[in-house]
Length: 287
Image (cartoon, rainbow, N blue to C red):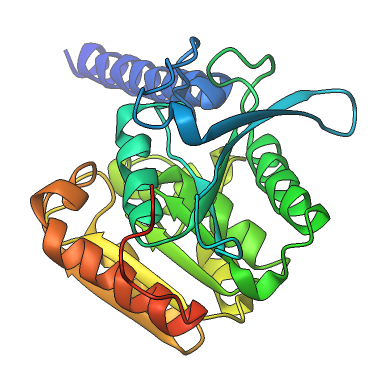
């Protein structure tokens, strides 16, 4: 009987180890599809934006195709720009992003929003390098139009916060806005799977914690305290790691819709930030 029990325990241990290693192997083999959830069809152009929208086709080094949504203002002619970097599970034309373009345009900013490789109808496989390259291209396009860095705000939401932090740590800009930002994909994955050696497994990190101190412009963090996708503690840690001037504005409304649920506070935070960093009048422009 003792021999039977001993062999049964050994068998159970071997089975548990094999199951554990199978889970590790599966997660590592499917990292791209687990980190990135790109819609594979382009969103239709909203009628509210159509009169103001120009789509600019871009070619990245190596021949990959990119696209910019460029949203202009009727006035003023020298309106500053926001580079908007959207999150996962959406395209540049998704309604949740369009809402935010409208908020920015209502404050008098022009918007350029790059689509990521592998998102919508763009070919390619999403990757950290690919998303950051799309952001760099949007910045390069603005600079080629003669826009000075001081007239550019970089706005990153959710996964786009990692893209925005990477870009802002490399270039000059007038300010940075991060909404629903994480300290790193690996940090969040480790919280979700504490029983796995996530930091040894994952290659896609978007390690904003390591980059945010290199941002030299004013920083605004917007984070909902009831955000269950990216916990509020991530925003607090980024605030502690960032250089001054920096502000964390606490919202409600979860990860997706604090701009709706806490609209007054969300818009007031944006208005105060662009007014201070860009000297932008806060009256609504001619749209």
